Length: 282
Image 1: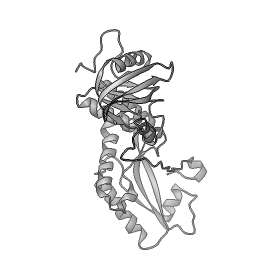
Image 2: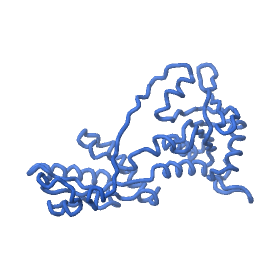
Image 3: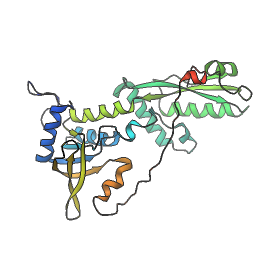
Image 4: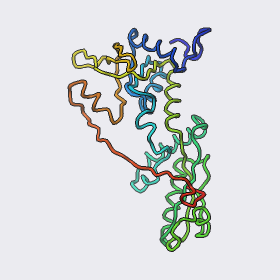
């Protein structure tokens, strides 16, 4: 495989996703045989492309709209292990997520991932403080937390100093702990650009309109340029459907019922200015 880092004089370096690269990518999509064709430019699709490209495989990634234009730019904006999963005894899941959080914060994307303080108000006497504190302690230990501050116990007055808007009549104290916040769209774009840096052909505004079949196998995709309507075929030994909530739409192109169906779900994370809560901490 050619060196993905350097580029001939006068050409854009690999990993640059601009107009010049876009035209070249279209030519390559129709002319080359790929090992892996990834449909979807969200964080999952971009991650698949990066993983395959760094293993020496020839990769193409096509996205109907823009990178991170779907769920990957509409997340909770957090990298976290899921404190609530400890109650469900999902220790392996929490450990893995916190390990990835630590890597992202310290090595992979420290410019995009930052510590985020949380205040857990306490309203139950005797049992709630040790119960919650034990959970947060385990949470920190599972992740080997080295790059975020440890939990801090607060008196009632201390909690009110951080968030004066808390209901005073039931408040007995609080615990401050840390997770991390991330620019999710920019992170996804960084992953996709890194995949391109390692040789993947990445192209946006490139919609899959049909699956290419050979017997029972899918051997590629037919794509349309959303800007000028051009059509070309992209062939690959493996086709990865990483389109998230649009998975069933791509599956329908095969005219066969897939083994799995996607049930769309929606989650809410509320963000509001600290001034609206009379708070200095989240």
